[in-house]
Image (cartoon, rainbow over the protein chains, first blue to last red):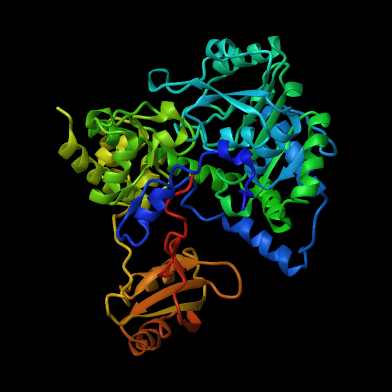
Length: 388
Length: 160
């Protein structure tokens, strides 16, 4: 029988961590720095609101766009936080996490062959979301020397007549990099001059340290040209609830909603109620978690540098992205041997693109005790394999 | 900055000044100064350890006792409260609003020991008008810590 699998999928590479899952299964005593989510459970006031909603029978569909109460609350939140005004009726869409929002945005705007510029390394879903929408990802190399920031000049150099959008995601997974207002302003300038759409994944936006969150859509003149993707998973420790949102001009939101209504219908109702509670009363607990991440961040960054895995200072998300150059290993070999020899799981940088090679992603959303134990094991590992 | 140091120590008193310095971006000397000051003015009252004695195989009986007091001229409740909270068996004591005056947490090795204390030491005191003793049946949470075992990490070990 001929293959029944669409050829389109040939261009999507399988997840780079499958093999580690197999290695991990059955191993005892592993400390994992390989996760991409908070170790905290959802703040109880949020969970409690959702439980109550279930008890009261809120078990049905919501509007395709999401509960209007949630969209209104979100509009007030965006206005209060970034002075951005979105019409909750036509310019906001509640999605199944940013993951769905990203997919919808790409499918809503791309024609076959359209190019989308993004950084390398980048979050693993960025290239596939473009490819699955028949677009072509175009990578802009970034590096530790430049704190993994995206350079506007490098972006501009890759613009062709097929370029449709720039996809950015800061604070960044896997690097923990943030971009300050000035750097984003330069990207905005490029986008404006070339009339490109900017899709900005801001799922980690609240998780910044010693700096203020910047919303791309709030940069002067960018609101109409930006698809803002945000969500609740990271800042409110709500990964399993699957609630995100898209904010953009009414035309784009209508197009995204058209796909969403036929493919997802609506985001989970109890998750939407939880998100509403998060917006109304989640701030103090979110703040508490962010303060704790900051303490852990400082410990892991100092610890990694001390053992010779040089690490630029990540100022966002909950990842450190140290260089493993002292060992002379590839990132995949490093991660595999670290797991087998010292039972510490980290994600090879190459899983996030060619420019991630030579680095590993270490998530510090885990207890300080675990972080210190992981650092001590990694220190032993590096001392043993130091290329001198 | 003092608040940051205190928060870290409140959560884990064994955190070293060096670790606190790393976590906050302060110098170790600054951290030491803050701690010294706080110890001196009793902002830091004491460093202690939370122990689940039942897991250590020790017997433990706890009771919350509602105490109704007769206020005294000039000193109000303070003098009689002191007569009560000075007993080493009293773990915590709070003056409260409502149907009774003093909420007292009494600890002993056995229910008998706690009852004896209430009957012989607490209830007969001048100024104590009445007591109601509630023995603790199960400890769910204390000082912000939930006493549950098996609350492991439910995350997948690797996610993107």
